Image (cartoon, rainbow, N blue to C red; front, side, top):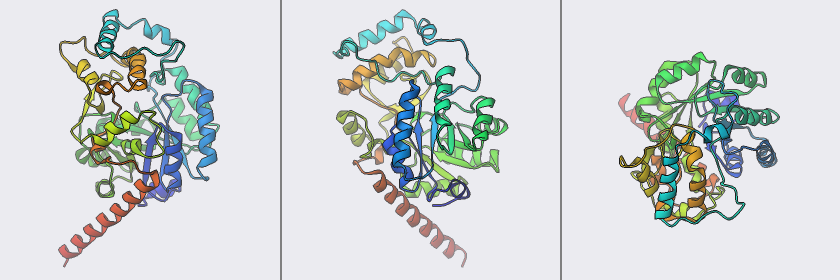
Length: 369
């Protein structure tokens, strides 16, 4: 499954795997793909350094990258406390009332609230980059579009390619104008923050819009046949995220959540603003239903919503409160029916890709006779 881009990066298969788990990222690269570690949860530079050290020790010299969440425009002089102060008390009451309704226990005294969406903030994202450029990363991806121009220049000075996610051809053209090297066309089916255009429509539109820039297809891809379809649409690789959540190397810290993912069908997700304030595809739960209910207070814009619900999400996850327990995941969750190793996922992807290509070649051969 090789393309010009995979050859440029020195990987065997044009499969780019986004994951928050260092063990999964390293396993993806070892299997012949390109592991990309999500950095948004690292608010302490030393924690990111520790995990990049681990990847370096376990990636067998294979290439890997980092994904950050960084706004295109600088936002300086705004602290987390400043943002917290913008959250209305009525929204805090709604969170407290919802948790009380489901009997969600408090965190233990002194226990941190876990992951908070602060990686978007200028000082946090830049501290992540200060660490990342000390390592031989080959790719820097940004989930919020094009990073600031100085970040693009800095990456290029280190010989690092820059990728940005796009949900429309218009967004993709802006990335090209900003000097981005790779555009990730993220379709409606994808997990996490995603737009409203399905992958089958979006991928060829983006390919045509930014030619000759390489495009990676994302959203609704979890099999070799789907990867072959993406390349047939003009993509130079696929960007996979959801499929790694149920791999043996993933560390969800929640058997209950793993069970929910394995049992979910492709119709059991919803695009909701409940987690971050921006539309993000995730498992549909009574938590997302509560926030999407028109009788409720409605969600806050990013990053207020993420800060508002951070402790609540940590409590729900820690105590595995099943009706409320969820995670960002794409519609491909319907194929995630068993726990497999990253290598097993790759074996299935490559085998399915080869079968799909053979099938198309046979059809093409018959039509050419």
